[in-house]
Image 1 (cartoon, rainbow, N blue to C red):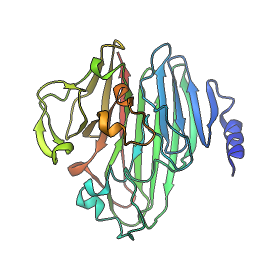
Image 2: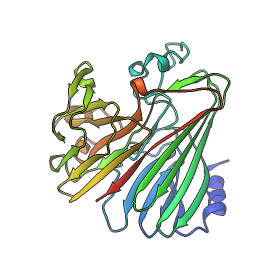
Image 3: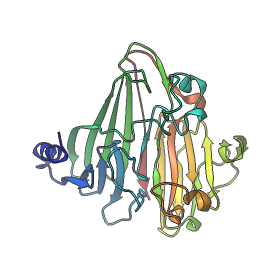
Image 4: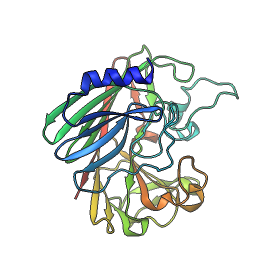
Length: 313
């Protein structure tokens, strides 16, 4: 089915719903929803929530102005889904990376897994009430050379006064598998100088920029250098306080015990794709995740659900 046919089919099914529109960004189809509380844009590729903002307020999510919206190329920003591994495959626990078959040197293993650039199915759009719109997207994964484990992923996105996202993973095959995963949330800032991250004081973290040394966070995190920190077993919500925008974004994880804090800062920004040299000033990633010792093992027929909720005060 070509793009035109896909858009027509989506309009036929959902076009009559209040506040729901089907949009085309170059090669990518997106569903935009708007209700009395908020608006959001979700791309079918990667089931990626790219925009979310409450009515009359600033965007909560950051999306790069340099995205090229090409099929097969993941977007920089919003909330990419990282699955079934996180980052470089070599940085994942043995139980995850040893499942990947030995590939030839010509075959590259993509960072953050392979579901970010695949087209998901839009299963449903429902107007729950005047302030809440819920979308469900799914991806059926067949066994392949890269991932020989049949799986089913479902993403439920609730757009309202809060943005609530839940990812369900089901093992539909005959063998147990293990995975790492993250909801790689990019948050929109006034400017890095005006922001700090609260709620991680007292937690230990892996500083991946310093040979994975274990350090302890003793104060709110200032965004004044490159950050790539993995916090394990975080039990309380984390808050991004933004003085310039005069708001606080609270990130509440559900069944996702790990949190990654990431900002590329000056030098790395110049090497990233679809990322302007000074874009680091307007974003920070607070990524709810299941990583390292919290990688999940799923037996045949079993499922797990985890997610994140974003609220603004």
